Length: 275
Ligand SMILES: [Zn+2]
Image (tube, rainbow, N blue to C red; front, side):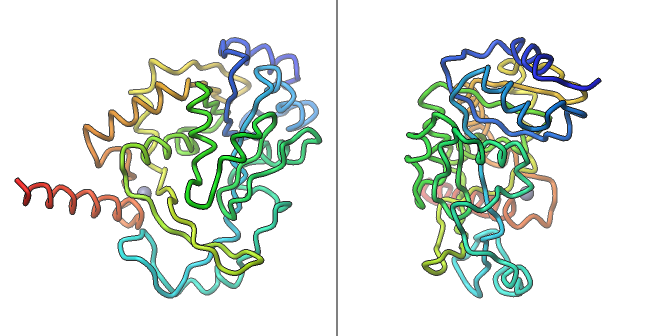
């Protein structure tokens, strides 16, 4: 069935989100099947849920891998010359990375968009969320998510799963999980970007513990889920405090998840020594 503005809007109503609250979305537009009018129609329907909308506008093409750097940083230094050759200078008008999705780029280009925050890798875009975008700095890349948390907003997953859920990274940070350093190419040289989140491939393991907080509807073949961010983040923090190895991925070669395991093991050992 072809989705229209009206069918999408009606489905979104069933999520019963508070229209006075902002939300962040993570969307796989193609998962909806055919949508009359394209991504603009989906964005228009989303704006009937709330007029304050936030989205990642990440630009991974700016990433550079240096020859050396801090230890246990979830990265193989040097040897990535091909990617370095392909790296692009960050520009505010750079398209959102295709991995983030066409809906984010549609929001960024919307005439009423707040434009974009200036982090050279982890920028955000949105509408009526100026303070969220302004809150971000090089040191605090997840500040827009913190703003959403303080506003008691929502996370909306549209045909996307928790591996796209940036707010789980915010919970990891609050729980004290290891953060990383990355580097970006900018017009003023190579910029070090601290506070960088790790791997999200294991985040679907949070689905069962978040079920009670989740409202879900189907739009076409897509699962569309909304979660209130504050209890969601608090639940994930609880999970990570109980098991500091939780939500890591199962790929034994994953540099980032292994770096988290190393950091947790080192801190457990030092606690044991103190006792
Ligand atoms: Zn991993």
